[in-house]
Length: 399
Ligand code: ADP
Ligand code: MG
Image (cartoon, rainbow, N blue to C red; front, top):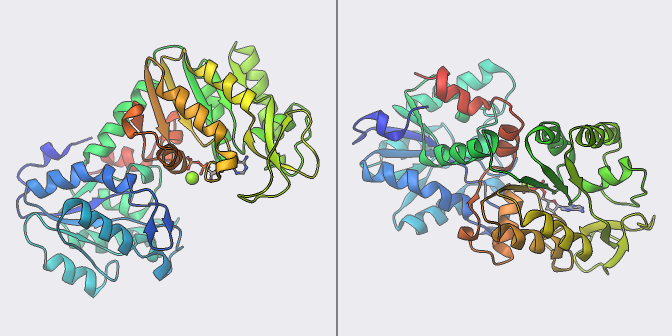
């Protein structure tokens, strides 16, 4: 993987940079600008080098259609505030406005294309569709820098195919993220504790098979925990449940036992009658979840137990809130786990958009953790041992 320094003199060069600016929005307001701030080091290096910088990024899932709800305007505005310079946003992705925006850039200036996912070619499974779009991206610049760590697990036009078409390098964010993840996969200091939660159950279950081999202890909370409780024969009421994954989870529990690994599950759960911020919370034992209620957080006893498993860790990785942390009544488990992670004497890594947003919302400073990853899915796939297309292409596919 080349770095910026390997690209030579970049003064006056048109540099296309893929960033991950997929920030959470409340209307037009960015509720966590962490990903934009994480993109600054590479952007500032390119500004200092005097490049003409063209940012490619996505926001949400517009699914190949132009949709003003997913315009990058709020991200361009915030970026422009953070660098105290104008960031010109084109009103299309590869059309006349994009070309005009690029043509108007002076050395050290930044322009941005509209949401790359407005183009159906961006996420197409068909290589020639993606390639056709990547060809158009490639006409806009001379060099490609990959810095959107949150998307490197995607084989998409602005992540993968573009790298095949231009001389390329990894940005400092991608390099830094990979450096940290290497510490988790190559000889982690032990005990190595992994905490998993959140809502994307089936996505995350896949990583567990591999983690059982590398981590010493797996701590499970959040929405996925109910599939584990169900696998142990417990009733989970109306909680999130992936029926078709119960068998696989049983397999993980058996594997863990056979390998002397510990899987820690909650013994109490905070339930409510409906999925609402102001639904009345009740603490119940994990084996007595009422049929007409759903679990929205781990209980206080479990949170303390999780914390005591986390404290002695020398390496800890956390992805996925322990409950619906956006709502105060169901944020307690996430708060306790986050706090425990800030106190370990070793490397603590937080991965995942919602997890990162949750710790910031709860008032933890970024530097309380060893590293806050900008990529949830990407970091999980890395830990799963998968080849990430957006990294592999920088290593051997590009020029
Ligand atoms: P990340 O973005 O950090 O990878 P996910 O997107 O997988 O995390 O999950 C975050 C979401 O999971 C949050 O919006 C949170 O409200 C939700 N969540 C956590 N626990 C539960 C639960 N018990 N039931 C339903 N949703 C949950
Ligand atoms: Mg998420």
